[in-house]
Figure 1 (cartoon, rainbow, N blue to C red):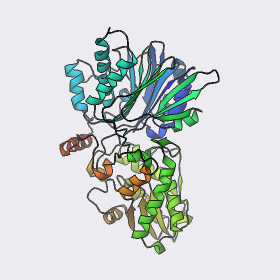
Figure 2: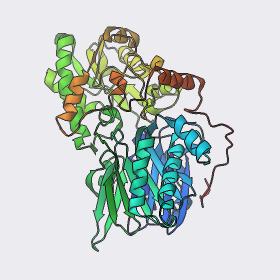
Figure 3: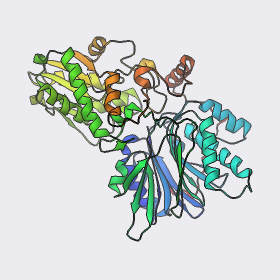
Figure 4: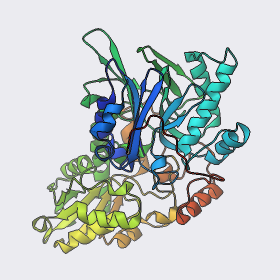
Length: 511
């Protein structure tokens, strides 16, 4: 998962982009980048680390302009250790384009061969986002070549995005700058990744426009949320603030990622008309019913959340069970999210640094721990060990999400089945693996009903990591096997022949 943010304002956007990216920091801690557009000139700074680590005052001063985009990176495809893969990416032709992408493409190899071998474009990194940029660039060139070849219109842009939708498969929420023209944003035809439109009505009668991965960004900037960008829709905002939009997909279908509601999104965001916080509260109600059917309530003394994501679900679950809700783990807020940290050893070490049990809350009690999900099981195992070491008699584990049994190929870093603790195991076997006295998982149908009840317009979900059903229809066992082999070897998601590291710098400030 990554976070994207774009602005067209009537004032300099550098500080606004910085502030907005901090509100999206939970979506990616590997790298961050900002690009601004001043007339026809791009200014960019990007690097590895969190937003506050990447940008200094000297960098911010050089990011001039009233239009810009920003990105926080969580590595899914490509080389996570390379600064060159921080976004935005740049291509010089046509017009000059900067692009930032949230999601993951599933036909990157095919697209790479097309843009490089057929269209003679150069891709400089192992990132699917750079391939996506070159697909967009080629389609824009193709559209303008049909007219005078020099002028870009909203129709050209929307036709190019329509063609892109027919070529690209996977999940994508995109913001892009086109030199001299403005900001383009578009979303994949299934709406797997979120993208929200916001605005600021100024006292002088002018309007500032924004696009972000989550609505929480707008709250922090005193912008208002206008609406979600629809699946397959493209929005183009000129540098002077004129907004154009068009549905660019032939058969769009709203099927958002379930994991956004379970884990990734901030609770104070609203995604596709659904309050993330209220969804997590309601998950606690349905999970409580499942707990009642599988655990003798006399064996539960207290309910405890694994902070922070599971708190709303745990509080509601405790209320419905009539059990005390207690905070037994104290969180160190200066440690990043362990699920999105690369490397199993790093994740395991971070759990102990991030959570500290209070012995008085555990000693002599039977504890029901509630977490948002159990993925690899590393965190859960460590937490159960800490609870028992603190004196708990019994430790039960409840997950607000169903068992994660299948790889995700749309932007979540769990590409190998071997890494998933639920793969080939029952709930009882998972409990034994993590050292718990019992495990209870949310039913998939119950989870989907919780979210759909809040927005009946949602037609389906990307529930692939729970069900093994892949919306794009191009994922088979050989594909998953190739991903597994690539992950095991530490290779990029696809291999670029003859790749040379000579990253382009466009008036980029010193790192």
